[in-house]
Each structure stands twice: as C-alpha cells, then as structure tokens.
Length: 616
Image 1 (cartoon, helix red, strand yellow):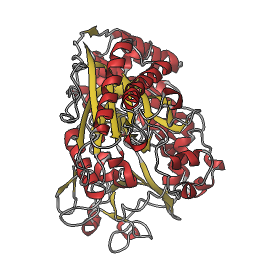
Image 2 (cartoon, one colour):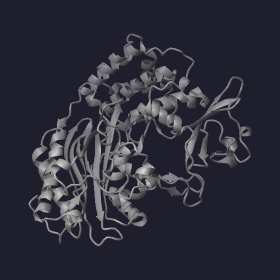
Image 3 (cartoon, rainbow, N blue to C red):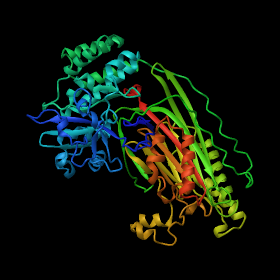
C-alpha cells in the first residue's frame, strides 16, 4: 500500500495519485552533492511553493514545514507529474541492454552528472541492491540526484542482531563482496565502509541506501572491508563459523588480499549446511479416459499449484530479450550475480464465454508438481508444471471438442514422455503437437468436413521445470511475461497472415491493411502434419516473473499493453491474489473487448538467491 503523505489515505501500489485528495504519490529521496564553496541545500533554494526544479515537477513533500525538512531528516520530494516518463528512461534502457556501456561515448549521458553513472550502470546486474535512480541534474552550486527512498529500511547491524541464522549471515557477507567488486570501477567502495549505507529490504536482502563516490582512482585495499565487518558486526561475529571469524581477522589485519579466496571460504562455510531432502508425493494427473462430449464441456480442469508460505522479491540480475534464430519469439540471455532458486510458485486460471458468444470454445488446463527440500537454510522447491490453453474454432460445438481434445491429448502424451529431470527436447514437444493435431485431423477426415466446417484449435503451452520453461505455440493465443526489469513482453508471435507478411519484411501498417490479415496460418486439426510448423522456444527465468497465457479474447486491441499498471504489475507481488487478478482481467476483457471467449492462465514464479549452489 502507498500511504498518502498529505491525507494518510492508503492507496494501492499502482496508484499514481491519491484516491482521496488527488495529490501525487511517487516520492524520491534527494541526494545533494554541493560543489566546492557551496553549502547544503537550504529553504531559500526552493521556490515559495517548495519546488526543487525549474520545471516545477518535484516538490518538497511538506513545503509548509520546509524549515524542519533540512538537516538529519532525508529530503524527500513528490513527483507531481508521475504520468510523464522518467527523465533518464532512454539512457537507462540503453544501459540495461548494454551493461558495458561507456558514458563518455553515449550522447544521452553527456547531460547527466557523473555521480549518476554508478546507479545507471549497476541496475542491470545489481537491482535491488542498488537503489533506483529517477533523475539527476546539475546547477551552478550542486549536483542533485533523485533516488529510491530507503531511509526507513532496517540497518544491517540491527538485522544481524535480530536474525540468528548463520547461513543468512554468510549470505550477507558474500553479497557484500559482490558489491565491493561492483563498486570498484566507480570509486564507490567507500559506500560499504559506512554502516548507515547498508540496509535490509523486506526479504532480508542486503541493499544500499545510496552510493558514495570517493576521490580514489584505484580500488580500496581489501583490509578496509575486513575492518568494516569487524566494526559493524561487533560481538555478532561470534555467531559465525570459526573459519569465517578467522577470515575476517586476517582481512582486517591485511593478511589476505585475494577476494576470490574470501568468496570461496564463505561459500565453503555455507556448503557445510547441507539440506535434508524430503520428497512430497506429487498429485496425480486427472483421469485421461473421461469421455468427451459437446454437452458437458465446461472449463473445470484447473488444478492450482500449492500456495506455499514462501516469499521473495529478490532480483540480482536482469535478462536481455532478443529474437531467437528461428523467429519463435524471445530468448533470454541472463547476466547472473547470485545463483537463484525457486521460492514461491502459484497459478490461477479462468475461462468466460464473453459478451457476444453463445458457447465457450476455449479450454485450459494447469498442473504443478512440487518437491519440497528442507534444511537449516530453509525450504527449497523443485517444480514441474504444465499449463495449456486452447481456443477452438469450427462451428457449433466443434470448437469446444477440438480444444478439449488438444488439451487432453497433449496432457496424456507428456505424461508418458516427460518423466526425466529436465524439460522435454524439441523433438518430443513437436511430436506431442503432431499427435494432438492428428487426433483432431482424423475426426475431420472421418466426418468429411471441409472449409469452415473443419474443427481446429489454437495452442499456447508452457512446460516448467524449476527455473526453465519451454513454450509451444500454434495460432494466435499468446504468452506474455512480466517482470520488474523488462516490464510486459510478448513471448509468442501470432501465426496469422499479417504477422507472416511482417516476417517477410512488409511494413506493419501495410501488412495489417489486408482483408485477410487476421486469418490464421497455423492451427491444430484442419490440416495434416506436413502443413504444421509449431513454434517451440526455451527460456530461463532469472528473476521474479509473471507468465500470462491467454486467448485472443483478452489480448485483442493491445488490452494488456494498455493496462499494465492497473491489472498486471501488482500481480507480481506474492501479496496479490492471482484468482482475483484473473477475475479482474476477465472483467476488463468483457468491458473493453467482449466479442470473443476469454481465457487466462497466470503463473507466478518467485525467486531468491541460492547460496548452496555457489560452489556447485
């Protein structure tokens, strides 16, 4: 919840303006860096209404009390135009795509103060450890940075004393060494020597409240890190394994200068806490022998994943999405800082007939198998999930039969051919699709149907094994992903005439001006195997991710793209109820589209750093 600082009304996280008083809600902490001879920012530097900038976008949170807002209390401003783009958005996007970007050669960086560079450069690999930078500019007297306000976060020293968990302590030390390496090129290692700069977020991840840049042109000696550990942890060091206590002493005395050796020692100490595996028998797949009839086709096959009491908003990496070699969607190229593990997995699905159709030709299925591993470090999850969505077509009742046949055939085939500890290979997935296609095609041939009378169905299917997914796609049902770093991404390309022409190099406006632009070029059932080319792609999940499988009743008219803030972004939080989220998406589709059946599956995958795999 976002509490309005003006009227104290609790708003949802997606609100930009308070529902009660209409005041803006986005806040940013001001980092004031005076130039030589200039003092700290003073009330006289603001206009009478408390605005910090000449564009009157950033206003002191309590302008009527400006005299008491300067001093030890962090200076916080309200963004009065949160609907406008972040001023550094274009440069930040370029830096995320090219983490090795050289600001001296980038035209957008020329107008940005150098003090902002570390925040921009480290966002790709070190969010949320490094605060988000919203804006930065210079005046004749000072440099001003607007960053995420973390002044109320729990200090590391307080968290160390409150949490009696040696493995958690080792993780914090290891994360400090990663930040030590990351800050070195930006003369920012002094940040880690100030205890007030080290804080814990709500999931006990070590984060910085800001970055301090020193005048050093070379990295600080490693003994400074050991001395910081000694002074910050105090008597708390006694909770660490003896070999780690010795390590800190040697560091502080200058007897150790190899950071790799420090990290190896911490990882070995963490490895000593070996987990004990406890297998949980997975639920059985639904009975595949149930007779299919057109009269009893209701979308009742949903089986939600266990809603485990685990939480993690940890993101220590990002992923760059690019077209793969086969044009089958988007591939992730992760840049990892810490290995990640599954922390929380849940799903929800819903199908609705829509506002104009008399019967529902969509069908969906979800199934998740979980293995729980318990040890001193807490719970570790292993997962195997199958999520299938089909949008049938072909006249009264036929579309319903085709979509259900496809779902059940795929489920049965994968039950028999996916039993290993990894995702099925490309050939196995292709054969699964060809088997489903042949099942429907044979019925069409036996009934001697032709043209629009031949039943068929689209398909979008996700197979999940731990943090890896396989995506199988035929037709115009879609898969989207949403995460904090990359936002909403469409991971499938529609198999339709307009998209085919775009793939051939035709301009989109021309391609979709064709009268047959939305005619499907691929579907299950109408034609034989020789005419079917399913799209198959593999991805790795490297941060908290929401997967959205949907039929075109939801995706038409760019509905999801136009409602990210109100209906998508908040669902990434484990606090959000996915069942409610699916219902709200269905209501949105009925309100804005409503011309077709609406089916949605949401799969939420939450991750956290995995210390035990560092030496593996």
